[in-house]
Image (cartoon, rainbow, N blue to C red; front, side, top):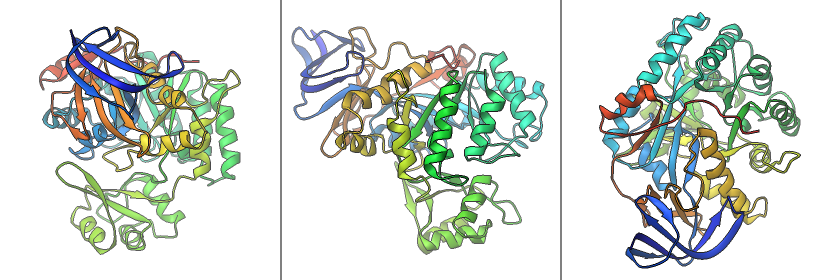
Length: 458
């Protein structure tokens, strides 16, 4: 007898390249051939089912509510892109949201590094400490907190030498988070395995036209098969709003975005941008984060100026978002490996909402959408038993309503994490390396041990 049988569902299978009506059966946390009765039967007529959505770029440490936000969006596995690992693991254990989570520890000069021109030995030590803390790998936040080009190169070399999963938000002290920073990244990191996040974020028309920047980014990606990539579909960005004692935003992206919208790159400029509706402040509640504007947003910013985040609207052009979601390589595979959100605690978890709009427009098929949101991301992370629906694969599943473009149910290891839109509480699983197992066990988290490297996909 099966543990669970999902009846009359439209099955979207990215491995077989098929869409068909049928049943899905689960036993012992794995998919099996549906052959008989089940202890639990759920009728799913009108719903589509695909392998569980894997979001390869989220920010979970922003607020404890992040985990439930991600789960409600239909995500079963998420890769956090900043950490810090210690606090994130604590929050994840307390949240009791049964998704799979991995995190990359961000390099923060002056906080976990001596400065922006650190020696290679510091990076080697940082990688070791990050893995022991439970992180799957590390990340350069070059756009926000840049290192010198030389130090960035040392970080890339250290990660490759230690076979460590590394991502790099393009940018150094020489070039910012734009197409020039992206091209600089290619020159510095070429030949080293690397996760290149939110490709659309470097093509906002700041240096050339948006289309010209997309073409330059495409050329770079084709020239570097050692890079894995993702892009997101929201018009909003994410921006730390915390300021120093003099009232200067610490993030280079926050300062630059304020200036591009015509506001002073200061705390007073942040307040003016919030009043104007260009910038919203992230306002947490028990199980959600909302966008706060106007005088209420200004008041919240003033009260929490040392630790507060925000989001600018209208930052990401539709052209670059659609281009990187749909563009193909000469061999017919996708140019950019995955669709992500850069969401989590930033309220833009729109993989289903915006991704299925592209499906409705005919820009991609449901199978291609499943490939970019599950199968490819599983391969990016080395999750060999996820991303497919074959018997024996992990029973991670996202069931969504294609009309309203919302998740209805999700399964992780055959267990409901989202049921009729409501998060079901259960312990989560940490995606980590062998060095991080103890950090997971200390918090009563299940640990799934991964190689912790950026695999070759092309």
